[in-house]
Image 1 (cartoon, helix red, strand yellow):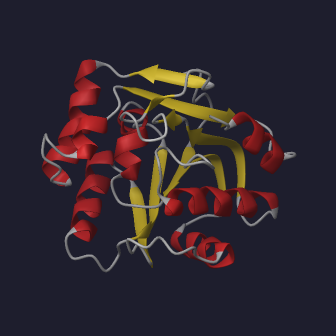
Image 2 (cartoon, rainbow, N blue to C red):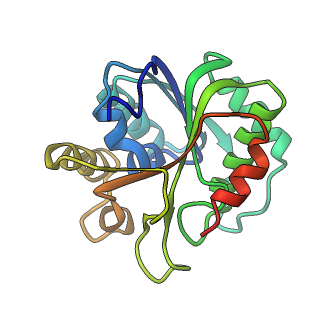
Length: 215
């Protein structure tokens, strides 16, 4: 674990929804409290239920953070990527990080378009220099086309089996803070092993992500 995050001091976690940070990377965050974490989500700022829950989770993670108000309707109508890019920039406190963590370009399950759009926007922002980072991690999960709960991709660059106490804390955030009961999809899907694609070079990033992120 220490080798994976060696020399990482400042990290931005950029996600679509409040709870994504916990579901896909909560263990990593909990196990590395020495890092200055900043978590932003592009959706649900005006949601009177999810907004306070997200900020409670931020306190548990000892993280800074902010929320956007992108449309999150069930129709999943495509948003303009440039608008998402501008929103992400407006939500972040800084433009330079040691590490950025975000969604897989193909998402983590079948399917939520906002996950894919956030990933595309982050890659664009790094590519055009509006965001600067030494490393990029992308969540590496798949669900067999919806046939089972998301699980780590077999060829992920990094897979972290969470200690039981860390997994239980992560589950508690989803269960007690975000109020997903034990029968919910979120509770059942909570991974005990977290997985990431890791990119140490930002050169040719878009092409390498498309190739390595294939399921």
